[in-house]
Image: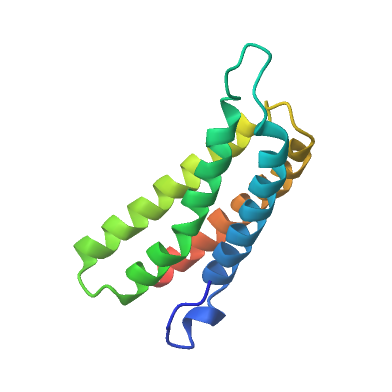
Length: 131
């Protein structure tokens, strides 16, 4: 993921962690999809396959929200981006917990992603104080 950004964004720890989460969630989703893409015995899809797509979509939206919050001048709009970032992180964490209940060998990697999300939340709190 390469945005045309000022160089200071790539040095922000919270931005770097968001990029790490994007890469990790895509890898996990790819691994999970291989196990979850088959139909059940009754011909239905595994419901967990949708959560694997959700983690990719939500993690992909982390970095743009960080960029938008950094570049926003109006404090009201900045707080909207920060709230959105917080919601994305919460949803991403809960979808990881849901995916751990799936019938896939890839679920073993989800605690790693949740650990990275906990680190991201700590960095996010510190970063928010600097805005």
